[in-house]
Image (tube, rainbow, N blue to C red; front, top):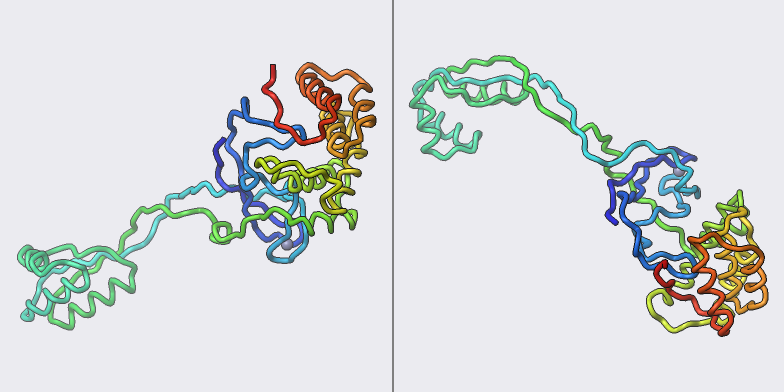
Length: 297
Ligand SMILES: [Zn+2]
């Protein structure tokens, strides 16, 4: 899976632009999933945060609810610029000084500058009116004759606002910030609460996704334990995915009877049935560790 261009979103409180990572659509088949719903791709750093703190007004907001302003794909627009062309018509008596001036101002070697003077009139270049005027004035002071011609030049320029390019990136919330929004009941409806609690669950299980030996939630912090208890009972919808993840929360909490009862309360559709069977097998063996899922049949 490849990262796409950064998306620019506005803080819903103050409008300050922030950057949000986006993922170009990629193939997720064959990517290892875990019983707690964690998937190894994309890595956390590439996922949009559940919610973030605005760098400007310091309010918390849900990244998914923020207004999209655009993305950071570079775009240019044709642009017409008025420029002044300077042509050297005659070098005058102080030819060597004119040559040095051209060499210095135009970045030419002395030989190149001399060749220019040998073939007059010579176009020197085009600049904005004041830059061209300054160069012409110095040449005239040395006794040279120049002509100025106003014209327009086609160019392109970036249409991305500079405050977008300099916008801070939305960061993932810290564990303390997640606990704060949950305590303050800032996450309604329950699906938002689920997202925040699932993020906490994954943070707590992250060492085990990376191979650390299992440490029961009962031996982690009180906050971790209470988060898992809430998750196990948090019904966000009548979806089978939600029920399966609640089974897993009960399993990791070593609540074997509750896990089995929820698992067997209704059949699972075919694409989830193999995961249900996998969890059932581990529950029968009194295995409560988070597990990497087998590949789908
Ligand atoms: Zn703000």
